[in-house]
Image (cartoon, rainbow, N blue to C red):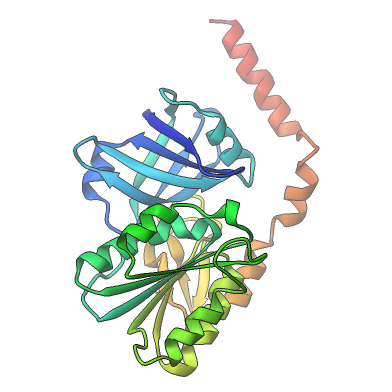
Length: 290
């Protein structure tokens, strides 16, 4: 069990939690993630990036958006409550080195996993430019944290309510065309955003890394649910990633796989399946016999 030390609501459906996990806090590196299970009874396992860690407190920070049943259950937890299972750190960490100028592009909730990466590149002596994109001003997360480490912070909103109105690819292209062209770009966010960021940087020869968030079950490469095509080869995001050369990722195939269960997800919104009803009945029966 892992106790929730602190919970903060960042926007309507985005939450930040500081969770007790001393071993993970000690070992984690930028770019890595955990897999958690909210409930021991019939619970789904989901991957979440480690947004930060405090070794002295023995805690890690998770930032997540409520998009399904499990994240909604997690959001309903309060400070002092416990998370049933939490495994990590998983995945290959970001390769951090001094390269010169690094631009980190975070779209929506993708800003959270960008933070430890940007922080590490800054600590390594790089100039760090951060581009943050969101539909509107109230959907930005961790703006103050990013501003504290960025040499330049560029805010982009779809509706123009904060910063520039437009797409994150616009300032990214301007940077690539400028006198201080980035030596490296890190892009994290919706797949369609990462795809077009990769298309933007490719003509300029800017090395671009994308952190992928695919369907994932076990996090050890056994289930195969997270497989993607990179440079024509099959890779598993959980063990080979989550970071890959964005110019080699088949984003169209990845997005097609992400839509696999969309019809069932939509159908399930107003439907409690028979299996779930049976599970609830069994849990109630076991509780009644104690």
